[in-house]
Image (cartoon, rainbow, N blue to C red; front, side, top):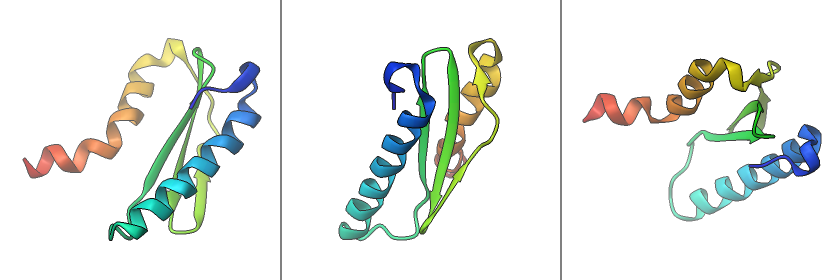
Length: 86
C-alpha cells in the first residue's frame, strides 16, 4: 500500500480496509484463521500491520529506508513457514 500524499495515516486506513476485504475473500474461499499482513510506505518510511481474526495490530515503529535489512526481514516473515515446509 502506498501512502497517499506521503500521509501515513491515510495509507493506514486504506491498508486496514484492504486487509479486511482480503480476509472476507479468504473466508469465502475456505481459508479461515489466516493472518493478513499489510504494509504502508511513502517510499522512504514504512509501517507494518497484521490482521488476526478481527484485531488489527500496527507496529508502532516507523522504519526508514536506511533500515533496509529490518524492512526486508519484516516483509519476508509471512513466507517463513512456506520455506520451512519445502
